[in-house]
Length: 63
Image (tube, rainbow, N blue to C red; front, side, top):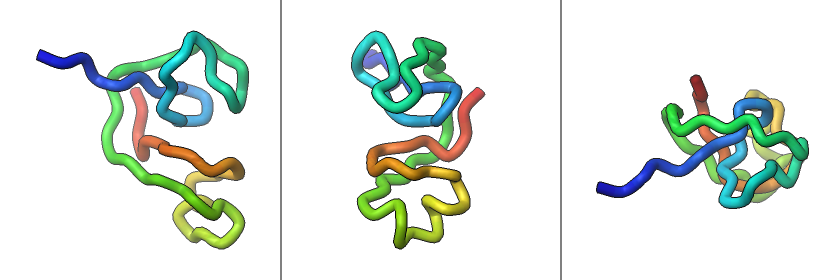
């Protein structure tokens, strides 16, 4: 069985390291739902709804 990816609870970014590159926190969760890949945060309605300002892979909901 594979382990679920971890996401930052603060900004909902998928993270591989020990700290989030956006908010520099280490508060992670493996309980999340949905995924959005944001390539152009300035021109994306989804990014605006999520409050995303940096491109990357984000979850839609995190516990």
